[in-house]
Amino acid sequence: MSNETKIELATFAGGCFWCMVKPFDQFPGIHNVISGYTGGHIENPTYEQVKTGTSGHREVVQITFDTSLFPYEDLLDIFWRNIDPTDEGGQFIDRGEQYKTAIYYHTEEQKQLAEKSKQEVEKSGKFLKPIVTDIFPASTFYPAEEYHQDFYKKNPLHYKKEVEESGRKEFIESKN
Image (cartoon, one colour):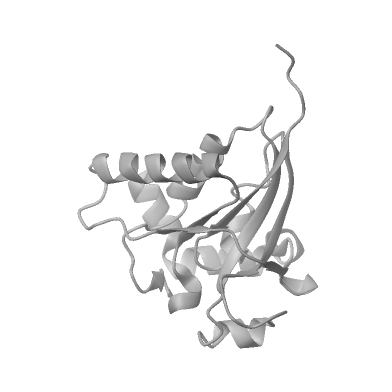
């Protein structure tokens, strides 16, 4: 059986998209991680529109990956390790619908794997509260403005401060 290259997309909402790029952006088989917006009712939204919480969009990362080198299940594992899946009001200091967690599936297989992984997280006993991460079909993805792309590389000090002050780093370290 050949190990053919199969490129897919994965889209995850994990709160502030600045904090969700780096966890995925360091593995063979990951071709691209783009910060953006999805799920809302405004076409071509701006950051200013999304951050108000009235656009219906969530901040997301969209990952282009080679499934022969990096399976979708591994992306799901990274996603779950970098969020608080019990937070109904956003993520850490970022509050509002635009910062709530979600998995946006691009194929029926991704949907099944996402649902299975969510059940595994629920059964893991790591969390005392219910898992509230949504699972939605992927919809139109809008890349965020250029200054948001690869923020952790462009602004390493600001990025580090954001991760630490938000409570994300401490939470992740306590659960992993």
